[in-house]
Image 1 (tube, rainbow, N blue to C red):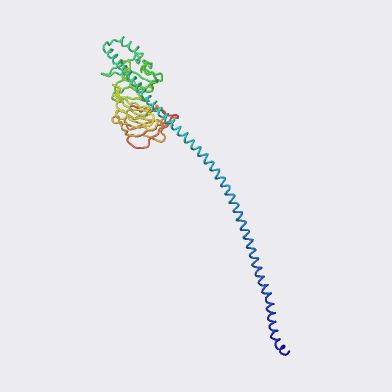
Image 2: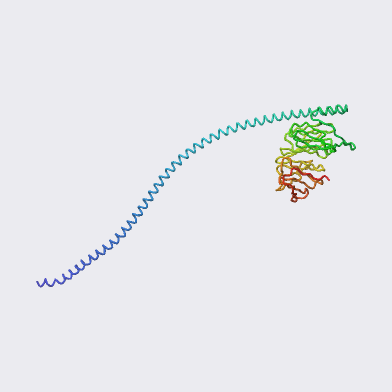
Length: 395
């Protein structure tokens, strides 16, 4: 018993330690449980967040799937449209080839027609030239007959019967030396005729007939008052001898003429044309001497200077070109922003001293340029309508 009592204090201490340890274990358990609870709360929150993210991803995936479906449908529709457009393109290509083949066929026909038309024109011009040559021969024969017989009655009869003669012949002639001058004023008309007035009585003395269309321009020779040149819409230029009473030469034109003018020598005729060319003719033979492309559009006016060395042309391209008569080279071109040629019969002119050029405009003004100085033109105003003709005082 005594021995047992000696051991009990040690055992009590042991039990106390165990009891303390047992008391600490629940606390540690509670602490561990608290930590686990906190971790669990955090993990639950993370799980909720992950779940929300997953839901967002699922919605995004669903949206992407919907978009992908729409894109597939759209792609299918585009493929269908592309196939239809390809078919339409193939159809258009085939139609284009067909139209191109038809166009080539039409162009070939057009070329054949142009070639045939050119041949017909050449043949027609050849026939006209033959007719003109026959008329010239007849006129030469008539002139020779007049020179042989010198009979006034025969001359009067010829004047009344030959086509292209002066129908009435009461004109008076005045001789100065060996030069014969006519006291006439001559004008062209749209009735295909030209009329000659007696200056002293102001009455019509002569009617010149031979043109088959409107006579649009004429000019009297500066060297001999007996010669007159005229141009009409019948594609002819005719040279008249007023003393003999009929035309003495006919020139066949490829392009209609808007203006003609004798040079000072009386041997050269200048003409401007609808095709934009300036042409020089020998008045004795009717042969073309030379030509030049004067304007890009219709030539409306031609004016020979007093010296006969310069010729001024105006065109619907609103340019006024000054040419050297011998070389047909452009000496100078006159133009102005406000100067516009009003019609196909607008006439410009050169001053007597050949130092100035004047041209009317569609706005009613006249522009005057210096030939020798590159100055801006002087502008004369006063008309309210387009100016069709200008003429410089001869004295």
